[in-house]
Image 1 (spheres, rainbow, N blue to C red):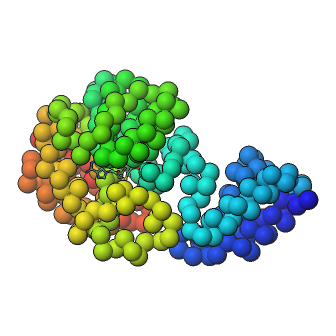
Image 2: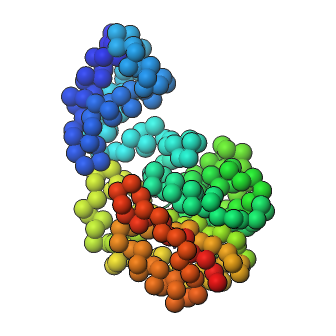
Image 3: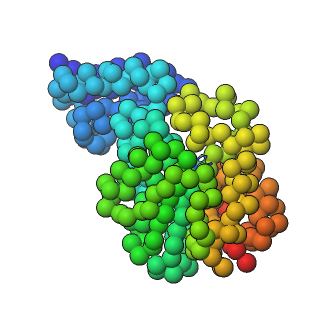
Length: 278
Ligand SMILES: C[S@@+](CC[C@H](N)C(=O)[O-])C[C@H]1O[C@@H](n2cnc3c(N)ncnc32)[C@H](O)[C@@H]1O
């Protein structure tokens, strides 16, 4: 017989404060709300309510796993992105809030209603599915090298009732060109920095993180093929890591792509570049 207040106190006491888990009490409330199937607001208003034993048991299990470093979204199996719930598993990167900047930049482009769109390295499918849902006229394709990730992305497309053409491919090599828009959030962490990432991030698949020596191996390879993938006048919106925008603009310029915009995230990092085939 445990009340909401007691469970929240227990969570705040057991969860360690660390990089990736900065606010144990906030985290406890997030976990308990999902374990109980209620909103966090409801918890705040119902401190004295006794929750069922099975809810307390699920919460207890999640506190133990969260303490060991498992990401919160792996426990619940879903993550919110651009206002929609996406299923996630250890096979995919948990969608990050900053990736919503890619969606925002893409939706601001003057794309023809029925333009062809390609998402390279789709993971959970968060970019492809969101664009297909926001602009139902678009013809959206998405590729990933991981079959397990594609399975998660397919389920997310069907969950949100959108049609996306999925294919297993190394970047866009197996596709013909003609895309009006290419979006990509490829791995961009320099290999040498992987070991220093917060515990939670190390649960993401290495294939989703490791960008090689300077972090740009895959982005550079995609840039080398973008001119072919894009239709004349087509655009690309790419998510990048810290201090990569200058290098990417330089490489893009050398292959006939103009940098038309660079978007900073809340921490001031130039997180997204928008390129256009001249
Ligand atoms: C950083 S994750 C991004 C996932 C998703 N687009 C997002 O924004 O959350 C990068 C994705 O690229 C995929 N990937 C890595 N190398 C690839 C390659 N050579 N060709 C295609 N996809 C690749 C990974 O499997 C992973 O799903």
